[in-house]
Length: 299
Image 1 (cartoon, helix red, strand yellow):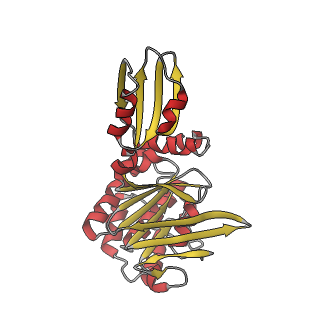
Image 2 (cartoon, rainbow, N blue to C red):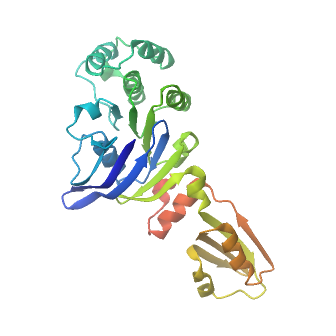
Image 3 (cartoon, rainbow, N blue to C red):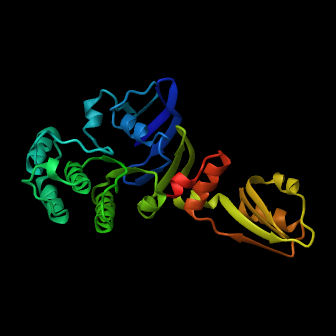
């Protein structure tokens, strides 16, 4: 199990991570969503042992990952800019990875090379951005890591390659229990493949749980009144948003669906209904409560 306790990382007096806590079970696909600058990349670098936490701890099975080769050997981390040895080609990089990772599997490498049609003899410096990311994914997946960390995994990949990567990730978790953590600012890219979703904002996890668990806590209600109650009345709810358009009140609230509807109906509306909230909407409402401009996460 991968765990973090009070994980904090500061750069030049600014907290990139602020008391982050989580537990990630083996064999799941964990989506980490947040706007640019929310701390996603910093969190992945702390998990992989690239950064040393300023406070708290993060590691595998209770063993910190920083400065610990036995833990790092279980992790493959693909950052937003893949690194390759100067003037190397994919075949040479595969040889390098094989000498570094004891679990590097040449059959997996050959299979992935057939899936991602790259010339393993061509210099990687001549590859496009998307091709370099494909090359890095081939290398990472061939190490058969216990934990695969992907920062903006689909950046630079076309629609076909994105679907291919999604299928490979899901297949790998099922076949040998690999745990995948995917950081992205775009929820739509990763929602369908994730078992668990977390929202990171200004270095803090503000929402965390299974897909249905996260979206199921938030409810959107519409009610029509002959005499519209004052908005103050609705503050008895855990209110996230409220708008009035004539005789129609639209509100978003956290809590038990039945309890919320019972309260609204106690105000004698002519009509009321509860509308299902998508996961994306749930995160947008969470961010709006915090005063964040949601345009960057809706993009």
